[in-house]
Image (cartoon, each protein chain N blue to C red):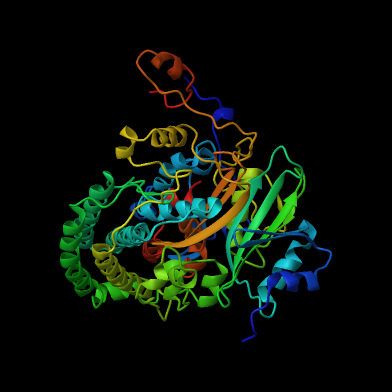
Length: 416
Length: 172
């Protein structure tokens, strides 16, 4: 079959982008080059239209591509508890952080309390998620810049974290472990020994990464002075997480707007000085060490802290399976919650937390029914990719991979 | 450093006509302003003494169909210095436009493009108002309440031909 001309979807002409490139691009004096989506450093769907003069980047027009997950729209058609499964799929390197922000928003909307043991488990999982995500970042960033073996080492360690997730939730990535009112179930007996093994094994590995990279002349050449972001620019562009802190802005949601009891843990917020790629690398490495400190404290608390792992408010939280054989009331609650779900009042809440990539915020609006009226996630990758043109201007095309890598984008996190 | 000031009282003093309503819910403050006054209010909140809302966390479009006015755009502000939060909200009808806050908070650029793409709300004065998530020639705005959710039939052996017939592309 031949394709009729009107069936060919054309994404627009150069005139549509004329305000984003210099006038010389229209006359052909500078070169327009598409980088990605096939380039390995562009994560699958990200496309960067670069305007080049020689090898120097003058302008960048990012195009985040079409993943079409439709997560926010789909969540409006699902009940609150069903919708949690969608949040895992948003940022597939930090599923527990996404679970957490959505559950915190639900809890704020319906005024549901969380028992202390559940809070500690949540903090533990959120920090393991940060390690998990930073390991993938470090491996892929290093391979983009040219260090092959880092990827193998980082994925070797990440495997152990995924195993921990598998022990608690039965799933390696799409865990849906954090639920409104607490967590899905208590930590199984196999979890704490496995966590102890991991905590014994991992700190020395972080030292190994630093031994490989921190003073490596090639690594320093490729990252120092590349992609400098001033603190003013970082705030104006709304950047968060390690990118903001590498520019020297001391803003960590865990300290500034504490949630899940983060104010009771002892940890530092690493800051950078220069705001370049190298500082962002150092900040993330330090963050891994700080996460280990938090995990160690949480693990110690869990040994002493017994008690419920989930709220006993039967309006929102299903009863334990074991009660169903004895209590008619439990059967009714179970049936009501799994067929109708719970109703949330009319109103809107906004919760932000610190995900591995920066500030992730959830806007949740209820309308009195059992489905969310509107869910919106302010996802860090979306904001970070927006800043790439600002960061890349004036650098060589070879530095572009380092700049994309240091922004740590996850394109699933960027889509709606 | 100026002492922290309550944003609502400051706004009531500075813009007595622009504030439509103030709502408190679950410890969060929502200030409804008229679209015309939005840039002034936003600039005041960003630069005002004791306010300094310098971090725009998110821009969210909401569709309240069948209510009138139908749409709302919510701006979630945070102050890195004082640590207080505020939600600015603008209500508007279907054919109304909102002034862009991109000159005030550059981070609003893509977020406003997203609201424009998903709800069809135009932003006047936006430097680069193009679609961002959907193709340029897409009909409709997917996150409106009257836009169907849509689905694709799963392809099995018994309905293979029927589904294949409706797919015009990618024929070998």
